[in-house]
Image (tube, rainbow, N blue to C red; front, side, top):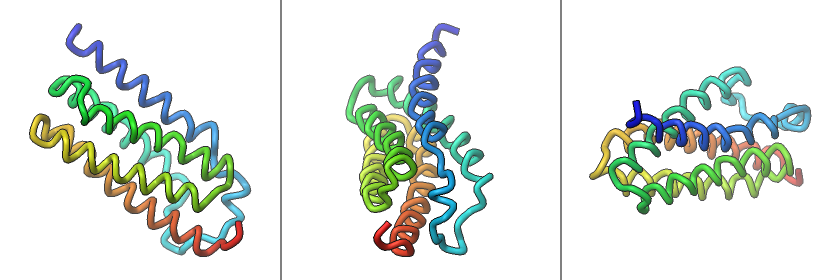
Length: 152
């Protein structure tokens, strides 16, 4: 049981970062924006993020157990910061272009995490692959919304 106590820390830290998404929600501003027809339905986002955040916490914990506070964990922390900031930038500040820049930085540190953890914890790296795919899709969606709403 003691072995898993540190997992709780990673879960809590991830939940704190995730809470940005519940504080800064899309709301009427986002609903009024033009969006591509391939935009997923609103109900899908919380489901996808719930699964991803659990995987993010597990990956961070596995990286910490194998590498300690090394480069992989620094990438893990950085992606959480960019992740939490995105909701504020997009839905709080209504800055679509800056949200895209934040997402690009997040994408880079997600990839950095996968690369730096791969040899020590393949499981941690694999847990981040769906996250990288989702961030790629989110980036394409963010870009499309930005292009479809010039001057917003």
